[in-house]
Length: 121
Length: 121
Image 1 (cartoon, each protein chain N blue to C red):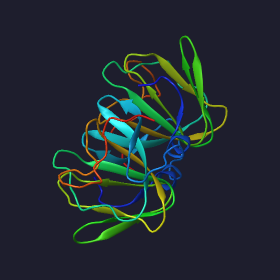
Image 2: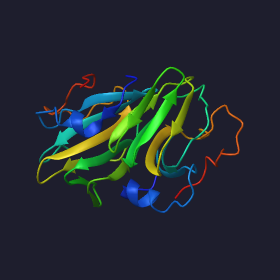
Image 3: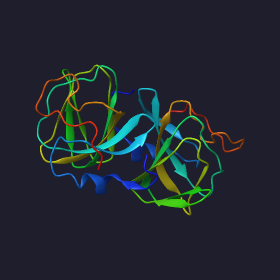
């Protein structure tokens, strides 16, 4: 960890490319990440872990095969492990994520949107 | 977990007593909690886990034996395991915490401020 105060919005404002989560802090073996979500991501799931999303700025929808949920600033949602989901936004949305270190943004999917799971910002 | 959208500020606004963290969501074996901090807590440490604090509203200081840090809204800080710390505020401060399920707010200290580690809100 960093032993310093981190502002998640300041950190996400340094990101220029959508769908490239960056690590901002570590809690035991979990990573706290920020990302810009913009448009449609891909359907995927994480077989080994739940995944927490919290909206910092903007709005996002998480689609599931049988429903969808919409998150506004300050809202959080935990996607259970093994559940297929597709994040989607109408405009750029700034998001905080929490998941075990090493988790891939694309989960089990084969996609060009797969990003590094090791980049700090 | 709850399979529903949770707003951390809405949840903390339902709390009436300071220093009584309430669980709002679960991520694998971690709990997401909210609490009102008001005044001085006690010196303590958590020998087995890091602890994440994020300020939702207000300001808080985390004192360490050799320094202190001040958190404003949106700021987060991870206190490393085994490190003595004492949260403190001048006015009521609304805080989000993340730590393994079962973590006690008072850590290794014997204090009347010890709260339940099982209460959801």
